Image (tube, rainbow, N blue to C red; front, side):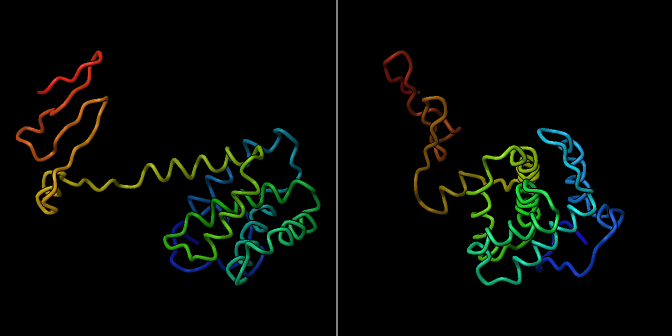
Length: 188
């Protein structure tokens, strides 16, 4: 199992915790689970059972044509499987993270992620687990575009406003063309 895959998620059998921890994403999720295990409620679910349930429900999302329409049914099934009322909160939040960590996200999976976010973003576990998604997103390489070249290609003047100063990209030396300071405009 890898963190970034092109295909769907397939859960075929109960896996041991060691099998899950071969994946850096799951290893990080496991660490976050250990952090929240006793806060705000004591979670008596074994990490192995929790992770199996997460991947099971993710697999079901991929099999369903409209998984967002059946979110309540999935939540009931999670509660029944794990025997704890708040289990669906935790599983859905982790599933949101797992589903978002694919290299290609099908439209139906994006719809179910939106439904999960709408329904679960206000619970305690959301910030803990979804913060990792934002850290990963910030680590993605940034494509640098030379704005002067872009301005030449489009035959347009590009002006960027930074701290109330307009900077013309295709002017010599990227000079400030207008700056508002203390109520007056200074031309540079």
